[in-house]
Length: 173
View 1: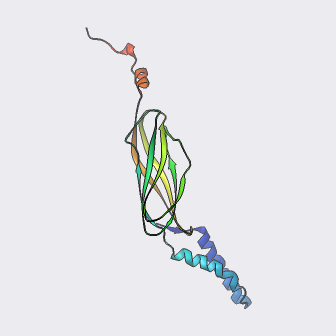
View 2 (view 1 turned 90 degrees about the vertical axis):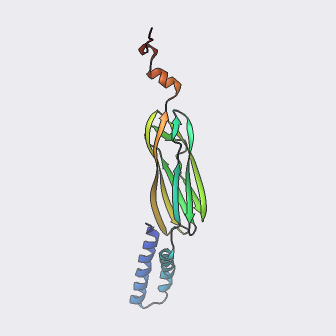
């Protein structure tokens, strides 16, 4: 669900207040103060956030200590706008580039990529990406979170040799 931003609500309040003061003071020049704010408020009411469907592409299995690409595929329908995507890694994993991406979007498909690295082996929680979608002017905003399934991290050979020490193995004669 999209919402109006503080900018639009504040502009509407300023416009109504300025018009009220203009009527009370019986001065036409005070109306000229309200016009830009009223235009911004009406523009915000008339605008729409583009419809964005998002899918997070994460490898099902990772090798401990190695980096792997993670992609966010966006399919946009409707008007143009702006998307800000911020990745969040689960405990036991880290993003090589924590910075979020902000791009201008139009109808069609778009792809954002990050690198993720596993710090330990095991079953990790889902990767999450926070999306903030706004219209072209930034007057309406929609927020949502896209999640992947759990990620399996496979241990490297050295870890397996350390966990299963040779003195615990027996030979059958």
